[in-house]
Length: 179
Image 1 (tube, helix red, strand yellow):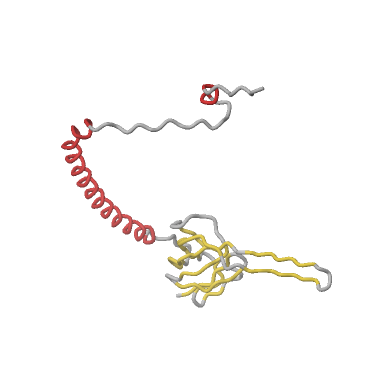
Image 2 (tube, rainbow, N blue to C red):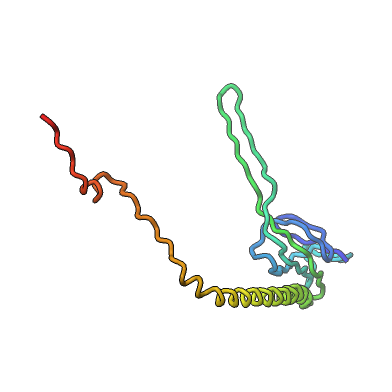
């Protein structure tokens, strides 16, 4: 089933799992958005909107359109103007097309939770590896600790004086002029 929605002053024909760019909407990637301005669902045409119909979508990312250059020149007047513009856009993925005042199901949120659980398992595996490496480093550090304490520490060289009126300049007496 398809629907026609209105957003950003434009109309879009959408079906489930469609991805496309629209005028910028507030929100972050992963947020869900609901469009209430549905002009048509299947064969039902609204006047102007279909009653009780809505379309849910998920924001994939906030992006920008291509650079459009506006160049104006007035001949024989040494007058030129170049101006660039990039439109702010939002990439969305259509989730569900709802009719008869139904509410959105928890299906899109469940899909978002599954990759998170996979990442959590991967993160736990990585943490285990890191802990193993840290344990190995601790054992070698404890064994090498007495040798490290016996080694002399390097000292930094004193800084050189930058100004002429510094202590080193005063320590050296100035030569007296000969007559």
